[in-house]
Length: 208
Image 1 (cartoon, one colour):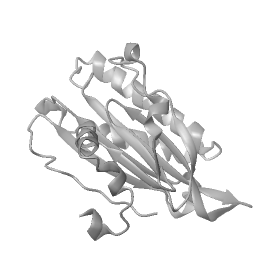
Image 2 (tube, one colour):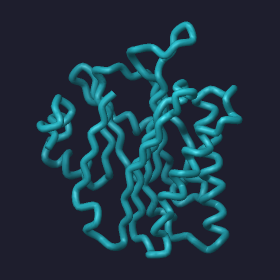
Image 3 (cartoon, helix red, strand yellow):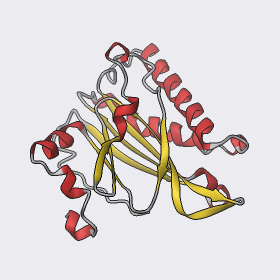
Image 4 (cartoon, helix red, strand yellow):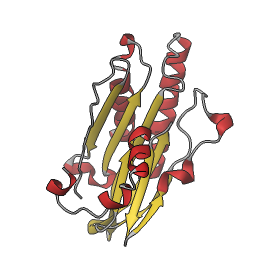
């Protein structure tokens, strides 16, 4: 699996924090796969400089916790998201409501498909969840699908302290392209009719 990460002026605004996190399973826990978190906090106060780091670290620690070795990836992820909701609820009780309506996050989890107890050389079980305006698109055989739409929250649920809810899942193969975008970048790419183009690029220099 190949990952391309591009950031456009992420430090252009002092009240916006943007981070990308990568967490990889140890050799003994290959069945837990790799986790990627793309997170953005808008209209942020200086006191929340480490907010995204704390949240991402909590989610990864809970997911990869050794004592949950008997649980499958889906259960571990849902438990980690539950702890994430608890963290956000505690922040709200402390008076930190800066993140409400301003947190945008996309969590991607790739678990190697297994066969006869051994990791398969091709394909992954793909889990994902999102908060706010993050966009997730899947390109397969020339078709482009809004994968994140299936778990978008209802309007009445927005602004709630319980931000982590639905988890989507599916199977991805090496030829698939998964594109994660902030809302602003997605709107620009859509306006320029560029999203289909980037899903067809093959080499890193073409992306650049």
